[in-house]
Image 1: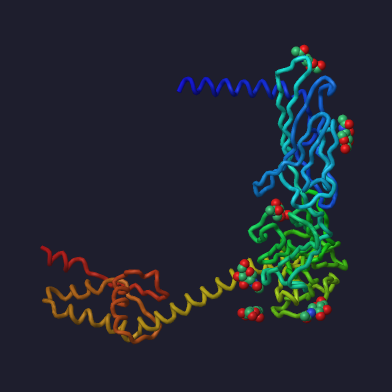
Image 2: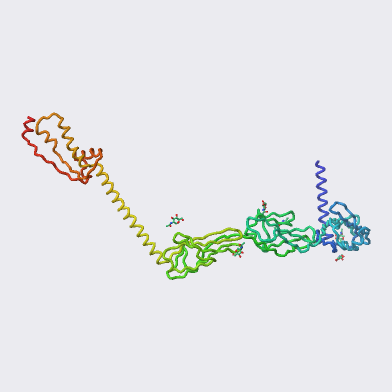
Length: 457
Ligand SMILES: *[C@@H]1O[C@H](CO)[C@@H](O)[C@H](O)[C@H]1NC(C)=O
Ligand SMILES: *[C@@H]1O[C@H](CO)[C@@H](O)[C@H](O)[C@H]1NC(C)=O
Ligand SMILES: *[C@@H]1O[C@H](CO)[C@@H](O)[C@H](O)[C@H]1NC(C)=O
Ligand SMILES: *[C@@H]1O[C@H](CO)[C@@H](O)[C@H](O)[C@H]1NC(C)=O
Ligand SMILES: *[C@@H]1O[C@H](CO)[C@@H](O)[C@H](O)[C@H]1NC(C)=O
Ligand SMILES: *[C@@H]1O[C@H](CO)[C@@H](O)[C@H](O)[C@H]1NC(C)=O
């Protein structure tokens, strides 16, 4: 194992030294050539040593992409033998060891291999080996690309797919690229490129896809060739509807104009084809089309109060519409009005509430009193009590009179409810007298002191 490693190392170092040394003796300016079919190609080699002080011997061979290898030329300093199969197509003349190919053919593609042995006169016996590989491609130049799209007519955003196709009449190994408005297309989930980019499918089409498309076709021997521009028209919108005004001051949804001013309003929305605009007034709770077109003129003196305006933009191809609404206020008038309405709003409801509640209270009172305090009942209750009390055992003639002592009231409001008895009786007992609008009579009787004293005694 160790021996193997050592030999490998040795071989490597020898190779390294050889390449190091040989690098000085020949030089190939270009190791890759992109040849054009039908044109000639020179595989130039420069020798970096005095040819008269050395003997050389070498070969040029060709390896196709299929792998077959053919010897093209074998040469020494004085002579060259060219493969008969290629002698009409190759040009080689010693001591110049560059190889020229007259008319490139697709078959000439592949690797060209130069193997060169050098033996210097001052150091006979030591052969220096030089090897180089030159890669050659042969291509047909690209003709002007032709761009096409399907469908050919304008499409509606989000509702259609568009396929762009780029084709070339001539050209090998053509690579396509796509540009919109002279900018290379980036990647997008909506872009689907075919293999080699010959077709581009945009699915679905959007507003931003609108523009002029070009395809760029190229290969190693033709720089990118641009097709003519093909317009893609996409119907979209309306988007970003807004109302602008030369006069008028905008604050949020409200425009304020000065009294006597003629105000202009311009409705704008992004749309293709251009929108149709309609102005609608929403005053007096009814909508009314005032004018068509993007422009609205309002004479401020016509505004008795703040009015609502609405601009409606409609795209008749996409069948979509957008609306912007705003309130127009005349500066002095508007604020005055507002104050006035605010005042009215502040006072009148309060007054109404007060009046109403007073009325309701009055009614309720009336109702209750009517129901509860029938004069008959009151009288009855007053008379009832003494009756029941009469059933008590009489102790003295004066006791009756003492118990009747108190405050009696006369209720003037007639009523008939039975429950009234309770309230009226309680009235008789001096409970919640103040609550009722009643006339109270104090029944004061003289209570003789002496009999009671005598009784107690
Ligand atoms: C070898 O030949 C090519 C053309 O065939 C020429 O351009 C080049 O200069 C020649 N090299 C030398 C060293 O004469
Ligand atoms: C032999 O001659 C070549 C070219 O003149 C020179 O580069 C090289 O060094 C010489 N070698 C020796 C051993 O003198
Ligand atoms: C567009 O392509 C999508 C698939 O990418 C397909 O589902 C849709 O039906 C196509 N729309 C039209 C209008 O062809
Ligand atoms: C296809 O085209 C796109 C856009 O032009 C580009 O970014 C991409 O590199 C192309 N792909 C190939 C394989 O050419
Ligand atoms: C305004 O219109 C709405 C809806 O059409 C309706 O409910 C409302 O009663 C109307 N108000 C007046 C003051 O006409
Ligand atoms: C759409 O409206 C434009 C004017 O804004 C009109 O010229 C065109 O004919 C209308 N197209 C359709 C399909 O209604």
